[in-house]
Image (cartoon, rainbow, N blue to C red; front, side):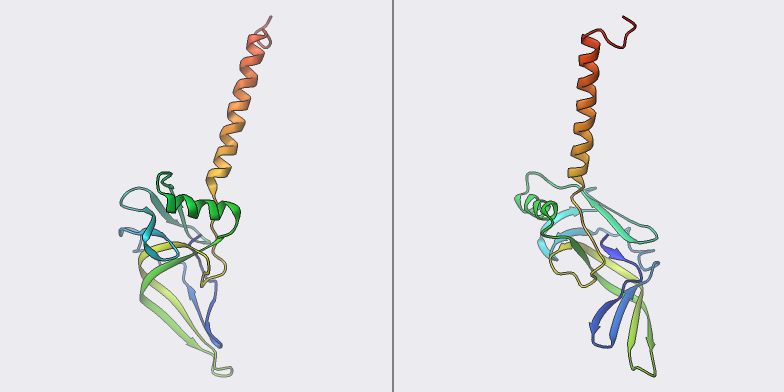
Length: 167
């Protein structure tokens, strides 16, 4: 998750910000990049290239990136995620609409981001929003593929021995 809805980020003591569940309603049709640590030349994927997909569910803004195995920077980021060295995300945006509230008794203020123009999402070392998360899904996919291959091999061995075909 690049963004988790209604998760508060402390801007400074007594000031917080959160993202509304509708903030991305008109933002996902743009050409959005996925970067490493907001660095513009470390592109992991891009929506227009079909290497980044983004969607919104009840929890937040979710995305998947197809890692280019020929790009060493991308592979390095993927390996850091796989090891658990990098586990969170962030996003680059302009605020188009927000709601401001102030608690008169405490003096605490809160901004709720209601609409954004989204430029990029990033896999980051130090996120502003702590509830975000990133995982290396290919590891899970590889494990599933290995189980399928192992099952197929076992079935082939059984057939070669004449088991399972009525003999």
